[in-house]
Amino acid sequence: MNSTHLLPAIRELYSRRPEYFDHEAWELVHVLYSLHYTDDLADEAEIAAAVEAARGDYPQWRAA
Image (cartoon, rainbow, N blue to C red; front, side):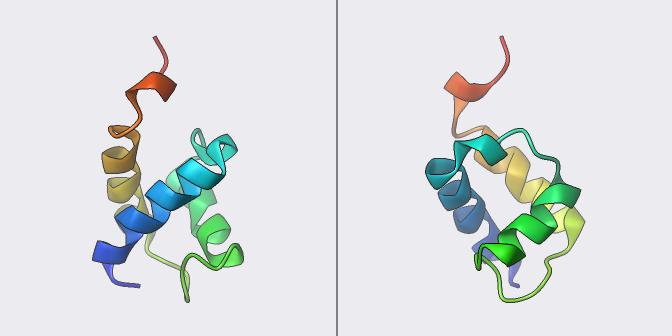
């Protein structure tokens, strides 16, 4: 998967299924694939970078 598609996929995952917000990148590899957000297993490092960017979009979900 192209890394430019990961950020929108993670944002959509978080908006539709907020229970995944606290999952680590290695857990999201399979989640994104299983829920058909990606066509193949994405690189964990790319997912981690997209997760950091996406988590910045939801400051109300961060721990105080």
